[in-house]
Image (cartoon, rainbow, N blue to C red):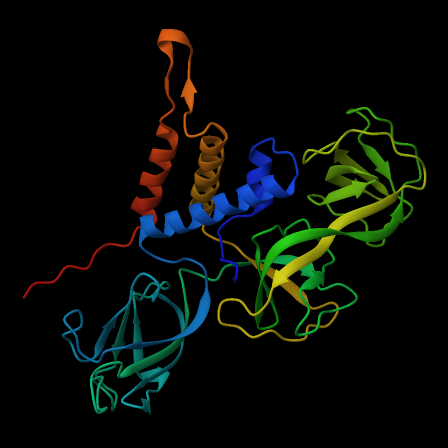
Length: 352
């Protein structure tokens, strides 16, 4: 079953709670993120992530009594219109006006009254007379996320090596050339570097000295030395400054010459969001989809709430004795309200 696009990453949720790394814990977090993402879409009555698709509409309907106007909403809001036709005939994009005029997401499409085509229709029936291919969604904001690794990737491979794992997590929607890929898991990849000094089993021993700087881990990346995972906070030359024993791993001592791994091998779902799997060469730019910050924040909150509820068998309480009461999550309710106010789609009302 294909994976679903979500609005945050496993790593973002893990950073907010102390969760031991395990297949069971990861599955629970991923499920909570998926549930939270779909919950936010239902709350706002719209889909935010970008996807290319072809949609058909009736030329006339109760919702569209005006012949040259097409109202869009929910999962049909536009980021970019690619093609448009009616009655089997193409309409020039120069003859199309998109609203609101302030920019995406576009919720209304009108045919220019100065064009040759001023109305939809002309086919044998008004049903599914309008065909549109477009990039649908709220926005397509992207952030740089490193490059494709030295091996590149074929059109059928399901693993991808990258040069920088600091901005990529499980759940990230990547763009490489014209293809979108969904990250479903991360694995370690050798950096080719080793430690050149003993690292003791103390939390205040936070400096990892490397054998070189080529392919050195970047701030924000998680590394693995022996069985201990560490988070890189900064790098100066060959010295990494790290937080020890993260993600449920155990603090340990490490000898000189210990190999340094980074989480730079990604397991990916190919050809996502209406794109086609393709060959990508080493060094190709990678970007990652950036959802609206309040949307991601609410998904994280929803996921954390679900995890906490499941861990307590949906019996979360605070206090003790006679002062014990249910934890109602007032902060979460407030967050939902603010997101719905800012991003919720209004119902278009009409009268006959």
